[in-house]
Image (cartoon, rainbow over all chains, first blue to last red; front, side, top):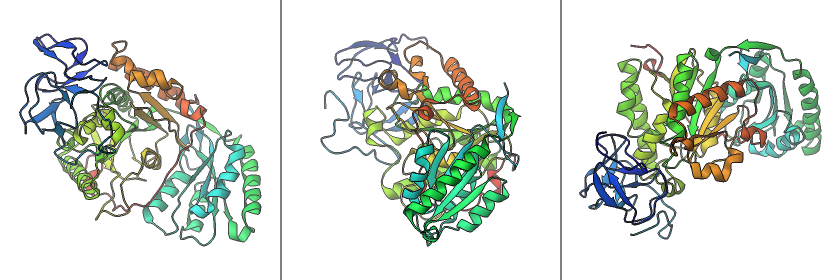
Amino acid sequence: MSQQTDDRVLLMAPDDNVAVAKFDMEAGTRLNVQDTAIVLNAQILIGHKFAFKPVKKGETIVKYGAPIGIATQDIAPGEYMHIHNVASDYIPTYTLDEGHEFFTGAH
Amino acid sequence: MTINAYLRPDGRKGIRNTVIVAYLVECAHHVSREIVYPYREQGVHLIGFPGCFPNPYSYKMMEQLCTHPNVGAVLLVSLGCEGFNKGKLLETIRQSGRPGKLVIIQDTGGTRKSIDEGKAWVEQTLKQLESTPRAPMSVDELIVGTICGGSDATSGLTANPAMGRAFDFLVEQNATCIFEETGELIGMEHWMAKRADNPALGEEIVKTVAKAAKYYATYGHASIGPGNADGGLTTIEEKSLGAYAKSGQSVISGIIKPGDVPLRGGLYLLDVVPDGEPRFGFPNISDNAEIAELMACGSHLSLFSTGRGSVVGSAIAPVIKVCANPTTYKRMSDDMDVDAGRILEGRATLDEVGREIYDLILRVANGEQTKSEALGHQEFILTYKRFEPLGPACFPSAA
């Protein structure tokens, strides 16, 4: 990839619209992903995902160059991407209960 | 590198020399466990089927497990009135040349007498197995299964692709490699179909995954749990992409179902989701149900990737634990055989870890204990399922 991406970030395939954290990173961390400067809106733990370009509600989320679901709301660059804003095209993901803390940070 | 294997009278070669004690209904579980307990560190393992009602799938599973190449002898423990066809199973074990014995608790005179009789047989059989003949075994005779459990978002970045590399190295040597859990390949079916040995097999792969998607949708729950979500996996498709990486890059030679042993080397997809209308509950209620199915397809050992940190091993066949997440590895290194999280930290490449896994497979095949073996893990679970026989397109080169 010719464009500059921070060492702490993993892009699995050129067409992906989701970036992966290689290390635990705090909210407010400033990163460069494909020459775009972004600021993380939440703590992103190792292996978790965030947007690095604007994603519209209903847009397909692409990781490893393949669809992994759709955006259930508009997602801004730097925003944490998980089950609060991404849903399966097949079968919904189950979590323990309403109060289950599946992610840290802004909601 | 040659493996110093145990040669069975039926010609199969094993990498362990275990005595199996198998309960044929839950009512015989306690007696069986008591028989195993004093010998649990001497290669005596407990397996069994809890149901009282007969089921062709579980019968086939037990038949394959009791004649598994790693198994030297089998003690069957029956209550007496259950539906399991114990006479036929005993006959199959004996026909394979393995020492076999059946203890029927109701006939023997209850718990204490059955435990004593079982222990006496195990004691004598362990001595007998000391003189099991050895034979050289080459890599192309090895069957290796792969599974992931306690996955997180690192599983698909490190451990799974590294195990996929190890699979590629094995398939190059014409070993047999099996990947499974079609419920965790949902979304991958068309990519997988392109890797099929022939177009007809590709179509079967697509159908197999569609069956899995329907089955899980009926139960309203994909094969993705709260711990997976905690670990950063958002959807079943994302989990599937990571799980799929375990299969490596080789051509897919065929589809098999639980209990089918591939006749020649290559990469096989094990279809673990039952046929017909959904019944008997979730296809695989936990990871060990899949390990049991891999073993019934002849796996000498299993590769197990985990990000959250699973600790399980298995009866019969050793489990090599590949830890995907560097943080988990630091916390649970006593349970982990390979630290694949080094890939994320930039301390190792996928190829290096893949090669490390390949080398470890050969050492474990030659007797080196895995972490879970040394810790005494011997998990086993078998429940009800229903399968139809394979179609012709599922076999290698069926075009």
